[in-house]
Length: 101
Image (tube, rainbow, N blue to C red):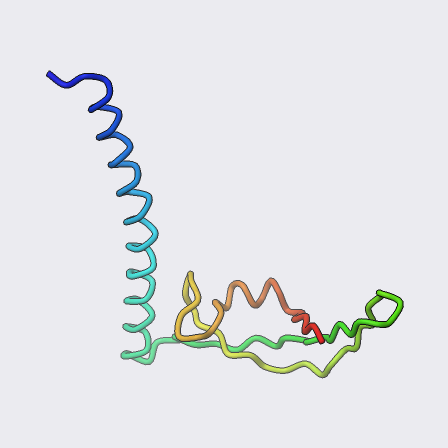
């Protein structure tokens, strides 16, 4: 018969296992779907117009903001970032890109 300590230990081990394997499973599935889209030429990448601006520090501890011309940025149509690109859903919500000088 198991006592309370062993039951609690099993429970915490299972919680730890699930909390580690669930995000890994989501990432692997998302990556596999993206690779399948790339292999079949089904809308794997997109572009979003992003407007960068430069934050230039001044001597009086303020910042001056200089706007730059809009530029197209490549993104992936997936839930998570892959292949060095951000997801398109994220870039469409964050169209301004701050560049610290």
